[in-house]
Image 1 (cartoon, rainbow, N blue to C red):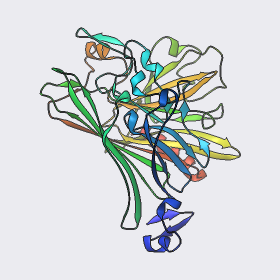
Image 2 (cartoon, rainbow, N blue to C red; image 1 turned 120 degrees about the horizontal axis):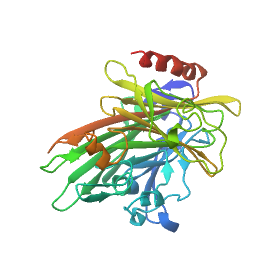
Image 3 (tube, helix red, strand yellow; image 1 turned 180 degrees about the horizontal axis):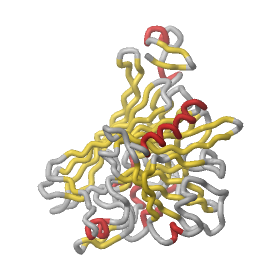
Length: 364
């Protein structure tokens, strides 16, 4: 049944008060109409719990804006929303169309640093995040006494006489929910094995992220990506955030996380005091599907962001992953499934429970 405004409702009971469900929850397609975003399709979603977000079919069904009871949760970069037509692959040029947002998907066949692998050049974080979705559908319907909202579509990453990969995605929620569910199916439609370097680049910004915030990860080990990530007590302070720092150089940490016996694990970001109240976000996922977790720490002035990024492999670039024999492969005709749940927590008891849960997984 629907949990709305602190009360449990049946479909019939709620319909007695409203003529149309869109009065309290729903999904509304739209199109950006100016600047570099012109022509990009989006869908505004609101659940009635205070959770509102934008799904972008024009950009891999990623999630752009996201707020809870009017409080922004995501980081929005200086580029803002951009059309995939502005995507430049070489080197670090992916950053020219990296809008940040709640979720920017990286992959399919490359994530991390630019590299040359087997004679082919790959830019930062791959191509899939700039692919438009096809076969897009928006569904809003009652399933029993639950009002379900979902957006789905399929993206291609293909090259003539080369890879033939698709990413089929469904993003769903329901009336009264504070949770977004992301379900992906990555398929190798070709007849040769292909690299599978998926990275789910979740990005959090002010005011959820501030010098009061802390990161909760059931880390068994934490490894800095490079020397820069080691300086100034890098590893020991990787769960904390300072005020914005002029000239800050990004730090990246790779976490090996504990999990339940079936692979379930999580990562969270907690702010104990936003207008006197605590607020947290939690990502639930399965370590069997996404065995690696990357933390991007970037508290720079004007670029104040925390990236929490589950992935199939650490984002070290395709050439280095192959060289180190860490490159996961997707067999011909194979389908790889990933499920992630993003939840907003504003209950003191639930937020306190994060540390207890992390400790139990760390000791598993």
